[in-house]
Length: 297
Image 1 (cartoon, rainbow, N blue to C red):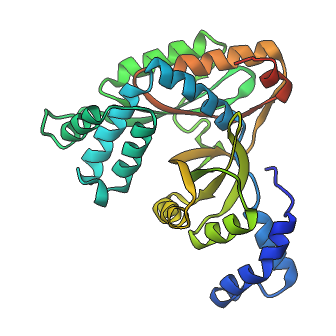
Image 2: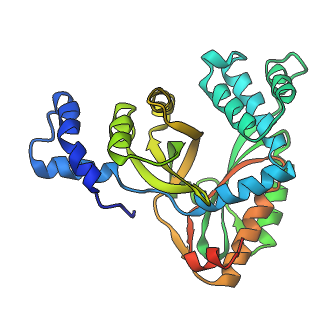
């Protein structure tokens, strides 16, 4: 797992952070343990697929490819936790995501009503996780919402096989990923302030990243159970929240350096994401910067 070396901002923040943490902990009894803890705080833990996916999402939104997926996400969130966004964090997050993608308010209301059973039952929708391998042994994890498991499995098997991959059995790659809550914040980042806010919200790590071609930001990671708390703390401290999500983070990555290999892999990922039943796709590859610069997407 790659990590970023603590910056000057980190060292300036260290005294106040120790004051926050030491009263609550009795295990960090030496400076070595303390430094080890904070080194973990700034570790990065996800592949560049997340950045590639962010670029693709903007294109998909223009094409309207995301609307059906957003509707299903709202329906399931409503069915799981109720129709009141104030008391349903999953629904509140799904609505924010839909609005950011330009999903019309009438459609949001209709999806909530459908999830609440006011426009007919959606009990047939089932959340299923699929796993497989892409070209070069890349691990792929897929989350789907479907009313027909056989159809979804057949569609996924075709998307894999036509692009040099294989749909596998449940558990074949799941052990390579760990679920994390991720809050993406936009804007210039003061690392000292972000570190303090992240700790207050229960974060485990963060990474500076580019949200857009000209927009800097950071991704802050936490246990999924702490996602609501972390997001509220960051909002309270006036951070601009770009996205709140649960994400599967790979424990290891595969480097993709061959252009033909990269094209085949991305074509497969596109084919999978284009399926109506697929809600999210995660893979454990990193793509060489020169391929990105060459416009491989």
